[in-house]
Amino acid sequence: MERIYIEDQDFGSKNIPDFKTGYITYDNCSFTDLDLSGSNLCDIYFMDCKFNSCNISNAKLQKTALRNISFKNCKMMGLLFDDCDEFLFEAGFENCILNFSSFAKRKMKNTRFINCMLTEVNFSMADLTNAFFDKCDLSGAIFEHTTLEKADFRTAYNYSINVEINKLKNARFSLQGVTGLLEKYNIIIEV
Image 1 (tube, one colour):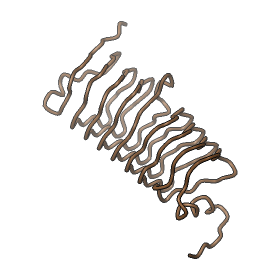
Image 2 (cartoon, helix red, strand yellow; image 1 turned 90 degrees about the vertical axis):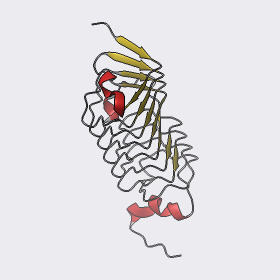
Image 3 (cartoon, helix red, strand yellow; image 1 turned 135 degrees about the vertical axis):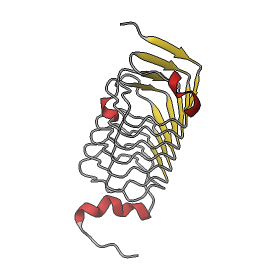
């Protein structure tokens, strides 16, 4: 089966019939105001693409390639990014709702999460070296055997990270956020 190649196209809610799924590569395309919730995005390659104000919640992502992708103002709940193609996985997220998604075992060095909701997100065994969590809510996020070296959590909140089972060398935290590193010990910190 030959891969279909689509380049330099803009897809919005008015031209959704032009959006195709299957064995396709989208290169330098933009997707705006689309409802792709529950869609089958398996085997699609997205390269240098931008998603803005899209609902991609619960979409299927088996073997989906995300290479240099920007997600802005998107609803992306319940996505299993760990099903995506590993090769050159690179995405950035701004003002997105990623609750109940999974990035388990994903290599995500230098990833930027800006003002995102990351409630109950699974980061187990992910490599988040030098990741940036700016004003992100990490309530119930799972960090188990996760590489967080040089990661920046200074403005993130509601996280709980076990310092004994995660790699945190040179990670940055605010003084207020340090309680998220001590939660496991059931101690009371009073200011």
